[in-house]
Length: 169
Image 1 (cartoon, rainbow, N blue to C red):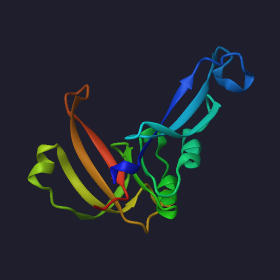
Image 2: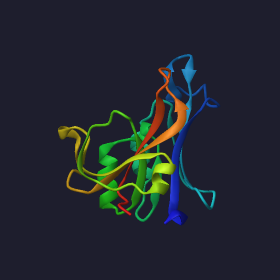
Image 3: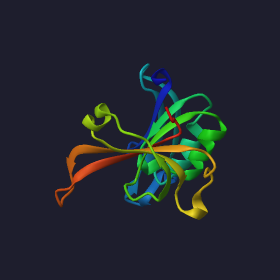
């Protein structure tokens, strides 16, 4: 399962500041953006896309996702169409979503002692994720796992990772 894990992330490349196409924010802020898909365990790049600094990370991610992979990406890349694409290709994914993501629970899964010890606070099968107009994969089963982290918010409450995956196992 993990041998196919592919991480996708992007970085701004300020090394191309004189290129007009690299306009990011304004004339003083120019950069290119590089999106990279890396086979995590083999440490080998599988795909690279370079765009203007203000280019869509979500669109580039859609171009990097290929059949059979197991993709991990962060909440800045969340696009409910990507969930549907992951089901259609087929490929697997695990995505960090915003703590405030809209979803409906179909049923809760029991938590083992090991899961609780690891900080898992919730493990549910979703009936839908996103708001009603943004549910291209509402018919596909998704799983959401909430994990408490050791980080704290400014108000002192514990931080939490909210992960969505199509892997039900």
